[in-house]
Length: 108
Image (cartoon, rainbow, N blue to C red; front, side):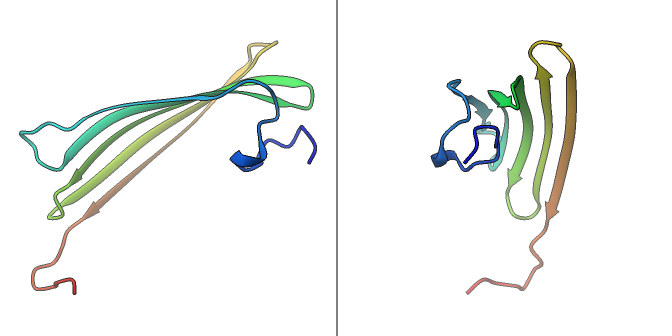
């Protein structure tokens, strides 16, 4: 597979010798059972057609899995910066999910 292909699966290797890193920090307050909030980050160097880019993915999330109700929310900002020109772009996304188990419906 050519070295400029950046969407290869993880076990196929990286297209440069730079290793990515991932970090995650979260909190689960005892007072609010089922609540978790956190931050995570991913950083890598991407080589594509003779140019190098820095990729930084930052996420924030809030989850409450008490089931009645259940709430999940996430915000993501992905930054790509070309190394030589320092030109930068941001892509942002978010998702929210709310669920509620109806009374009388039981799992078997």
